[in-house]
Picture 1: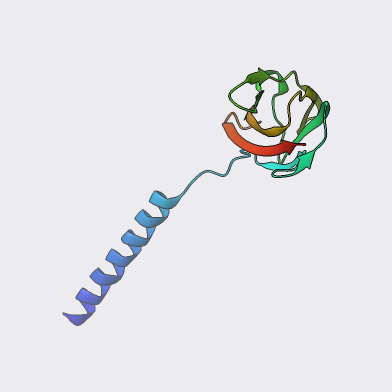
Picture 2: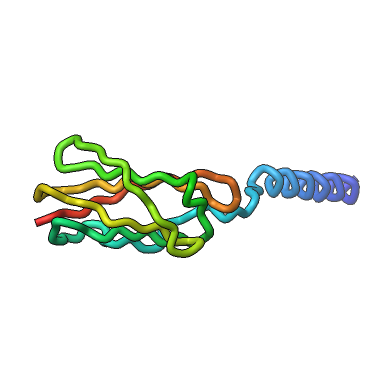
Length: 124
């Protein structure tokens, strides 16, 4: 009887382990993660024009990607982007007032997933 219950217990553990693996499995993808931003988050820069560059860990679709510059206050300005490399989006943005500016970005990665993010820099 002990041998039988031991086999049943081992079988139950094996089934539980396989179920746990299946439930926790997430397919690996190339979601676009922002690696570097110019200006860097929380930095202070001078105007009137600021170079904006976003470098990601994977290719992004520049035509389907969007960047909005917000600030100071609630003024929102879409940013015209150029794709300098498969993983880099860039632009020159006019900043007319001192204060905080929020960069809100949304990119379509090579794996088909949309990634969004935001960071702030200040203009003195």
